[in-house]
Image 1 (cartoon, rainbow, N blue to C red):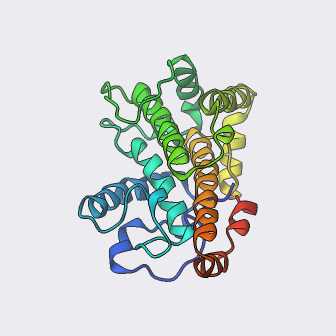
Image 2: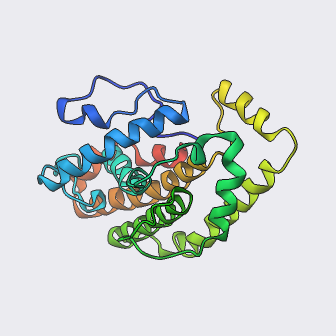
Image 3: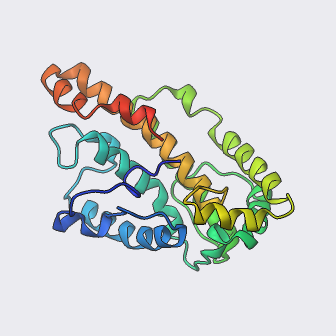
Length: 238
């Protein structure tokens, strides 16, 4: 499962991007810590009018309007809900011993379709609320970008099925030890954090490809500039 910029090598970030960099990270705890720093910085830049928000509305001529930045920022917009949980208990997302607890709670929780949410103050419930909110945000961005609605239809049910499969994985004897071995090998076990990240990454990719193709249809010179970065390569990776 690629993480599109969170694990790749990259040149030193510009000053305004320094707090948004996830380059070289593979440990889920470190990634969560980086997310907690990136979200307020990103929202501050948006509030100050530095970048168009949501990212899916940017054009190639806008600041951070290239396809990779739209991709990464769209995903960050969805991931922000996890960082916004008021009483963090990161172990629920990344500790092998607590994954069955978190997944069971998520599957018991009633899905919602909101992007403006209220938290309860109980982390295990609030993470579920946040995960659904992120999925709903991506559905909204998909509609704004003109993405194929079929790719977003039934998304909440689809992700619940992913969590059911993960629940079965964690029920196998030795799952926690297997998870630790996979992390040491820089593989991606079905930690809740990685499952959410993978789903958001996939959906952000679909949105970004739609934005890139829309720009290409409107302006052939922009098309050549944008497609030089190869959105189809983005489609293949992941």
